[in-house]
Length: 479
Image 1: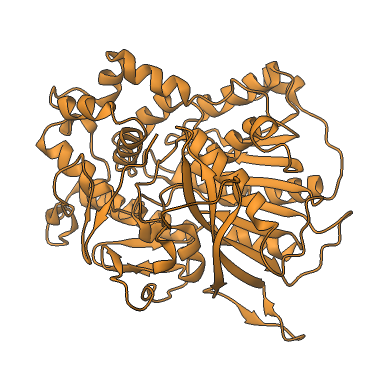
Image 2: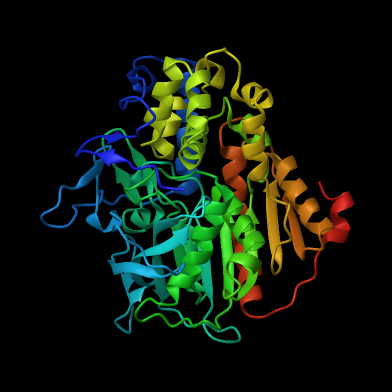
């Protein structure tokens, strides 16, 4: 399936199936308009900032000399992210690399940078339609020694939701932990996990996913095959980075929370057939969106309601026949929202569309969940995205906050049940926390931080070759 090309000028992004770009409603950003909605937006933004706490670094600068730089919402995308016309044949083959300056690093006593030396990557993967796709990311060679058994291991990390604009790419967030442009804010909150893994002596490779960063297509948000392939191919690409200490024999761990949890879960399911050469030792899947039908219900009307736009945009790109369905079921407000969200990061989406009910976007005035329920084609597409139909390779630790009302607890728990029934080696962890506020993202973000140390310890034990026993037997009494 051929990619949906994105034509960009120096200041805008135009997709072929959506109207001209729109900014978020300025009234939503106007501090002179107080009210319950504004208060909830501020609460959600403050909660996210408090949970994620990033340092301020200027936005990325320019592309290569002689080429017109791509600018997304005021942030210049380096020319490195423009894919070539032809890609290598092999999945995981490197297309290009360059040094990547980490936004947060310190000189070590031995002259090496702490926590490590980073390389920006572009590599080849295969998308859900079977076509070649260029994916970017980053490899970090740690300064810390690996003290576990065997050669230095590798963790392939799938970031949580960053957005759909190219300026939101996780590899750019490693360089600029806080990037601010014209109506855009991107925070590299998964950098915390990256640095903790590096401190343990594991090498880390981060994928940007298909279309996030690369300027030839939209990011196919929560597309399980695109994400699973991109993560596995990142692990393959890391082996070819100049100066990398990992080898084909290195144990590989997969790590992800939220969108990243879905990606790592998908990769664990797909590894045995798509990438048997990846020596998978264990997977952490935190708050995985396993059943998108249920997850969309949780997102609708929440602080992260803009993610509905990212999902629709991505699936319409992967399957162009959906464009007619989208066109028929969205009103002018909805079409403008889809266009606007296509260039937004998480911060932009919270401020622009936080707590929006999808009924405002549809031609019928019905919520998107009702439209999906009445449209067999949409039901079939979401059914194809369902995780749990395949047995994961190697042990998996699945964690879910029992109060999570964004990426619902019940559907994540069901994934553990489905894997257990297939004979998977599953460690299920129900994170018990009080209700921290409905639809504010707090119930979703808090387990990310409170469980992160345990998740990393569990994964590094797998990378060291330590055995683990499944706790599937306890599922009947687990919340």
